Length: 115
Image (spheres, one colour):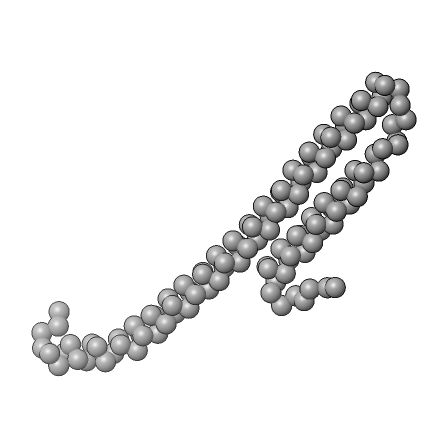
């Protein structure tokens, strides 16, 4: 137990640098944690965008199936009229690829965006 003021001063002199270092390290750890949280939130947002694209694709598949079924029932040429779906599918796939690359860029900030 510390009995004298001079003993307390000695304890403070001894442990002040250690406590300052500890405080600095805690601050650095908090900063890294914050950066990690920001990165994870960006990745999550992009992943939600990818999921939205997948849902658009599923809706398009449903519409495509309905159109094909209607043409089959009527005995019409199934292939004609389906070209309108091709551009939408290509656009959704391209957007998904862009989003996946964006996730890689967020996770690896030093990576440059290709044109």
